[in-house]
Image 1: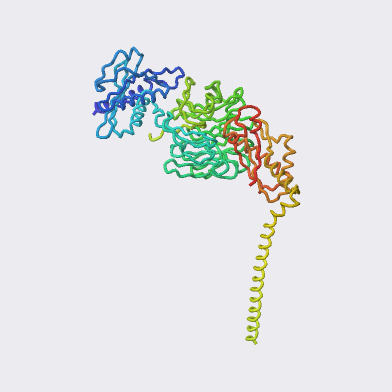
Image 2: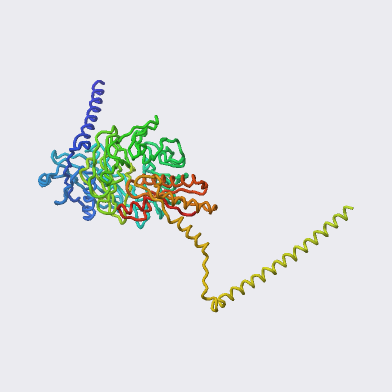
Length: 426
Length: 181
């Protein structure tokens, strides 16, 4: 009996320790000095389709590179036998510390995918998975495995199952679009032939709210992405800047039916719950903290737009920003400790990050056009924003530490107002 | 007695019915002839122009003035300073002209639009545009124009007159525009 209890306790302790170990083992995503992990991704093994194997390793490389945590190393001969890996010296010569080995085969119209992650330095298998599905599920299968990798190495699920909503402008019309986290598969959500802007995801990712001039003036539309049904908030005056509350099916918006634009709390069906601000002047662009109680917003009660943090329960608010006199577009980070926003510096808009206590002000973008509308990835590691640095406005991704910028997608026209979704279909 | 009364009533009804029918018939006849006359006039007109009166031109100045006033009402925008919704004194005269036109056209309702230049965010500019439209509305209300005739729309930075990014374009785009409903 005693041994049984001792054994159980030991087992619990051991698995707990293993879990802790897993989270701090490889990548500390909070460290500004974080180093990218070089990861070898040789072409996958396939008896039935070489093109599928090449595509498979390419999708994994691109997805892992996208996170900013990895530097993928491709090329070399494909792996012959994924069940029995022979660790090759050239991987070490190339500086690779990790290895993804994969095997893709077609079988009765289905695909079978075997994927393994190895630590090359210790020659240890970290993850092994086998998936079976239809061929059009290949990308989903590979992203699922990427999600496992990120979870094993950082303790966070990553951004692979998130989407980005944005505005695309073509010949004067602005429509709402949605694409996957990496810009893949973009398609229109609205076809209003009007001006539609500032999309915002509900906390469960099932609804998008946005402002549209479809009916002649600015109204808020709440669209159910499952059945495409719409609810319209069309009160007198201007109905703008919808922002969903974290953890609830509620949103805030700036409505001006009382004469002054004020921020209201509404149900997901568009019914007013309460008014949150009572100030002369413009109050817009609320963004909610993960605790669902505090929100940051823009107010010009001092004459120039500045950021304030309001408390939903007490009704009180504190000024957050004092530097720069044109601070706007706040976006509260998913971890809750930081707020991204834009400020006007020497006539150009740039992206900054500040701690919620007002300290740690950091500039992320420099020079070349306006950089606007920051939105956090659901794991807080990346920020998507709109920039005119290459001429007409496009969407870009930047890491939290401002280290690198990448263009998200290339579509005709101008893209603005990106909004990163929560993690979908977890 | 009652029988006689009813008889009389019936008679009266019959007479009045008869009168009504003839009246209607007469009216029909009149409209008919009027239509014919009109047609004749219309047919004669081009013939008339070819002789003597051809060089005579007539213009309705009253109507033209009205039309010009209407066009001015729609075309003259009120402009604003950067990030401001204060009515600049030089635009007060234009607003007063608009008020006079509105006062003499009591049935007309209008939309007051607010616009911004593209600096600052879309959301902020939608609010700023609304404040500009509000400021213009307040001027009109103070001058006695009924609130029921005024509708406000803010377009923020969405509908620039000039899409360039320079001081001239920005100044053009920061405006309140009037349109008739």
